[in-house]
Image 1 (spheres, rainbow, N blue to C red):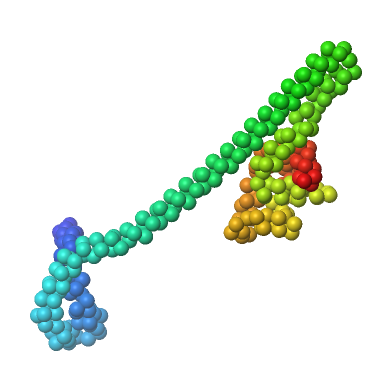
Image 2 (image 1 turned 90 degrees about the vertical axis):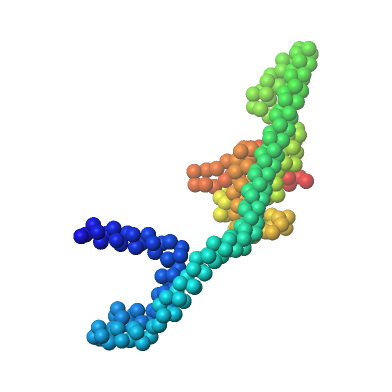
Length: 265
């Protein structure tokens, strides 16, 4: 008996889920909800329930209206879904295009930064090679002159690595490739008399904020933080700044050379 009731309930559930019978059942409940509610929940005699149900229902409400309206809804449902999909197609496609454009612009910006970094590295390497060639020529000339003291000075200079940045060529190349945020950070760190600055200190430094705000379109506090973090990472890769254990940044030797060059302009 239990299995029979389960099969009966399952069969009824499957039929209710069909578009036509489900729509008819829904319309039937909507049209006759008051008599049905009274029939189920009213605390009166069964005969009173049946009497109320008969008085408030008729052939139209029990059969014709649920059948006609339910079948109409079943036929209209696919068209309503199609109409809704048509309405949503335009904003959905625009949203996808906006997301694609934003992602593409982000990738282009990353490529530009990488290209600028590679260009700065190439300029630095080119300047170093030129300096090494010039140093080798001077050493050769000193050897031809048989000047031991000059040769010793040139060897010391090469060991210390001062030939890589002393002429200012690579410094100018680095400065030309630096962003406004990087330049402002170099100046802020160079003017610090004691200790260093972390990212939160920088965005609270009035001179730094004024310097970058005047040259940054659509400037906001959120953009200030994002650009500052990116500039700090780029300067660290270029070895112009170093980061301490507490997160404070200070200028390296090359960073101070860039700072001196910026102040000399």
